[in-house]
Image (cartoon, rainbow, N blue to C red; front, side, top):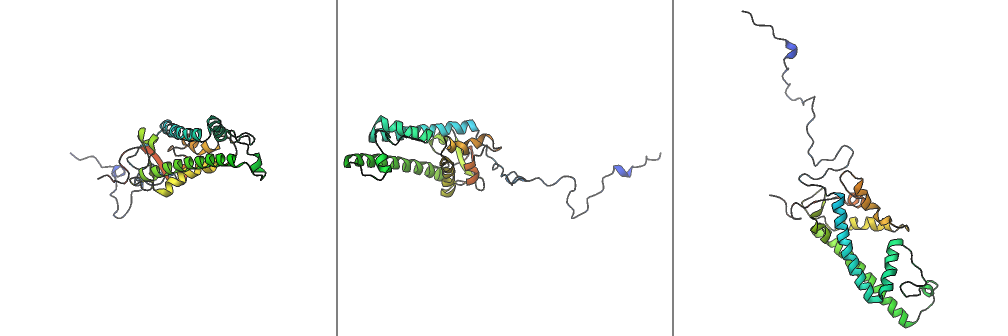
Length: 229
């Protein structure tokens, strides 16, 4: 009995040595950039959701506002706390009665009584001290540990996309802090929140401050500074 003829068009031709596959390209590792230049999330990490990031931001903000309120109340009382709250929310405050102070003479280059000047210096020094302590805490905790207290409580961590197993460092932490402050200088209410709101729009839930610093907020996996074995 003769064997049926073999159809040569159904037999795959052997690959020629030294040639790459033509049909399917080689897989791209997940940490390589996307074609549009947007870096992927580092392998093994899970991006934090916007809701969880909002919760961490509120926790940190509540602690900061509590400390600032206590310090300002000690320096000038309830009226001063209300004046600073209005200044922070609406970016406006009456010069004639800013927390019990009449700032109009200073705006016109006129002297004020010594007792009033001493109280005003106390308030200004307190406000500057609270601000400096808050910035040092936010930047220092992010640079060294990748997380403030609010992020740590919710299991979040800031990592650099280029080196996710090391602490973000001072430059990245400063950039993350400075971008919202820069947008907040625009004299309109809520402008400082714009970099954070971008988290809801970004595919990797990265705010404008994250993109400027080259960071991403992820669910905590390993301690910063220690590479997995």
